[in-house]
Length: 420
Image (tube, rainbow, N blue to C red; front, side):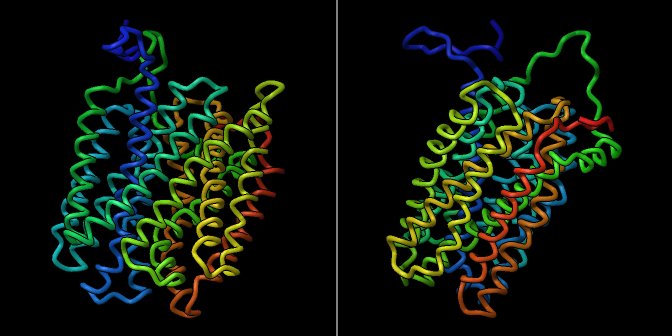
């Protein structure tokens, strides 16, 4: 029995498949990652007062970790394919957690921005690590469900990071929030190094080689890849908008304090996480009830995107209950769409040895749009005095992305230049 195959439950003596332990740790990695991102959104009101920031400046601060994150998505995942998820996972989480500790020590906005850039360096290969683990250890039939469950770690992290941050800020200040969350990430990095093992390679296996520019160009000649990419870009834009601005949006609309905002935001994320798992499982069961046919997973993606487009209803409500219901429902559908779309990518790419780099290409493109989301929203709020236009834009884009996914994602994604 190898470390990569099973672990033992000490009480029952039964062997637990190691892949479930790996999946759980990836789930925690996503939770910690997004908890650290949520730390800034809930801290922004306090930081804004301390550093005298305008809404436009807050938008730039919110996007600051994406500057390096965007640039390093592809290079870091190329290294991931060569080195493996064990070393890169530990190194990445260790770096961004150290950046969180430094963020809590920053004495001015320039120092803080530098720590956010370092955080982006660490987080760059995060989703490549997750996609690689799922490709290596999940069975084809379960990839969509596994990926959706893992990605709910994002919602749990946003919920936990927001509510924990709200109370830490209230009682100890925003600096304590950053340092506490950084310590959690460093602990995870150590556990991942001790527990995870890369899959054993056959003696006669072809040596790993990095993805080439020709293979990257061939990706963009695949209509299936472009359809998946459009969805990734669109959902990423809304994801970063909500992650960066939802606490301030709730304060703006409902006139509640920091702890009230933290509780409301956390509730949305928790409901969305539960809803995403249910929606994903039900739709996947319906689509694959007559057997596995990977391109059919786009029907799950399309249905979820239409559900996420209900975010465009927010301007019509101005009280807590309907706002929280719309936000929770739209986020649940968005998360289910993200899980299904990521699983669709892992299914459709023929060369699984380059899954990390393919994910990196996808994230580089989608994060270029995500980078604009907090900034553009800051300008929209400054110019119009409300978030309405931001929600309408997202809803329209999600519907268009659903239509493109439906018609474009059909053939396997090949990087050798041959037709799929």
